[in-house]
Image (tube, rainbow, N blue to C red; front, side, top):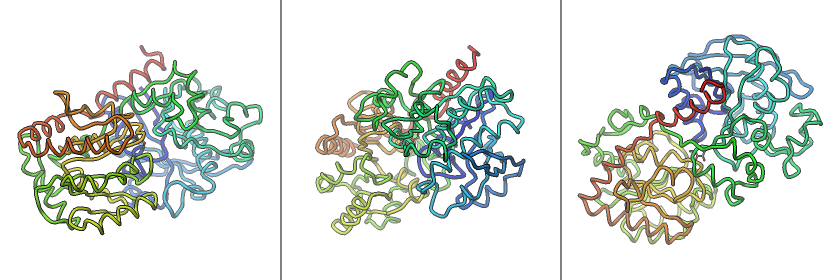
Length: 475
Ligand code: GLC
């Protein structure tokens, strides 16, 4: 099948979160299954490293209508991990100094990108049967397709899948953007409108042939106002075309047997290397050596990741005998909190403010437990990466965490889970993990089970292919 995967970020070129991991690894898995899956993303001039820039070749350029404006778009292509990447170039929109998003004109930047993706299909020699667009930044692709391109002779018959990675970010703007900035005629206002605003995601949900999310549990949860950030009403009568497929991870990139970044490699049968990874981790983050369990956290420091629970019982976690290693940045209140904890417990707590991919891997490999008490979690990748490195996840049973981690109470258990969003329920799971840790035979069995759990893309890629084929009428 021919599939175009449209995203605003993709590994290894540009990343700010889990979407980039998925956009970097799902198309690769689709190609491995024998399909022609290609990725399209903006050419972020200051973000994409020179080593990747060198791989890109110029193809052509064309003009993109954005409201009343007509903007230049250059097209570059590159082969990365056997996948064809298309990069859309316009320096006015994508040469920025402070990361990928968060600019005053994001609505216009991604309206441009979405329209450019469709214009690109008029000039290249590749016709996808399905376009899979991701998150609000690409939500206007199915929308523009349905408005302006579905009768175009070159684009006729393409099916649209829209994937929600996080429903919190919907692309919500004032109605005044409709015609001038987005170039959408007034008679489409009711399609774009939701709660008196323009809402990119709502419109994509409306017009796409299928809507997917990144775990089956999250697909159900977002029908509830507590999880949906207001969009449950848009999703309720679209259940017939909505489903959730659990993400996978790139098991080549995250492999303790071959990972060049971790200090010592290890496997299920030779686990000694993990101990070395723990020692080196303690050394690197400036904590004393010792046998106490190491609890790792790598996360954006924002409320929905559950940091209010961590704050509430942090002293108790320390009293249980843990060393805690945290990497992340985000809300000032949580950054401040971990700085304080580091001062209060200099021998027990390490905090690195920021995001350092190599250190993240060293934490996945060197910690014994990994804490993810998220309030909501569409899928979550860190718990799967932790499992692969024999680091036992302690998670709240929500979204993808509920779909990927089985509690230790079950004979196939791979982690410790708790249900209610409550600090003491979390603490109890953290305590159970510590008790198990000191029972060395049991812990060893648990670590082996965790490392053997299969979260490669193989299964989920098949689900996506099934869905694409169904839409294209191939089954
Ligand atoms: C978002 C979600 C995360 C998910 C990722 C990839 O970042 O918050 O749960 O794993 O997208 O789908």
